[in-house]
Image (cartoon, rainbow, N blue to C red; front, top):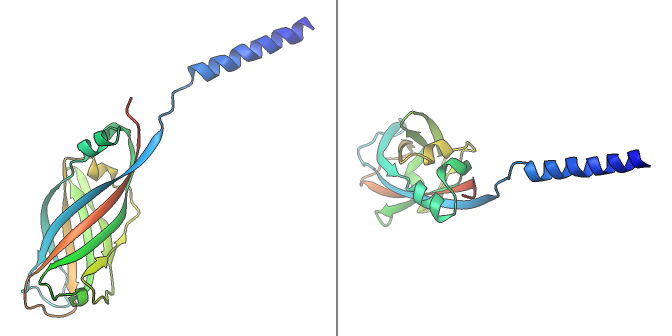
Length: 179
């Protein structure tokens, strides 16, 4: 009987030790980061041939976003692209019927360029276009102070005026809470 009592007490002590000395697991939170950027497709671009448009550096402001959501850059687990929407700002009467395909690439200092979103065989007479998002983890790019976007397009038909397009990206962040 004494041996059973000793084993029972020993088991409780060991269990208590593991429960109290285990690593404190951080709670995960999720929040969105919105990024917007404007670019122009010029009227002089060739039809049926791919061409690229380089967009100036996009400032992420991600550290402020992490802080606002009670997290820090080192606690970010992953950042996925949820939505990439293009909207024609001008001319007013323009739709996306001129566009055959589009790919958007992301790059940052010390990181390779990878595809962020794309759309092929576009048949859209609307002023907005939702692209197909890549499923990669983009946290390495959004943890940086800035990143670059490159737009690769193929036109379906000639355009007579420059087309100004606003791109809106919605990134979903999963991160641990700060201490």
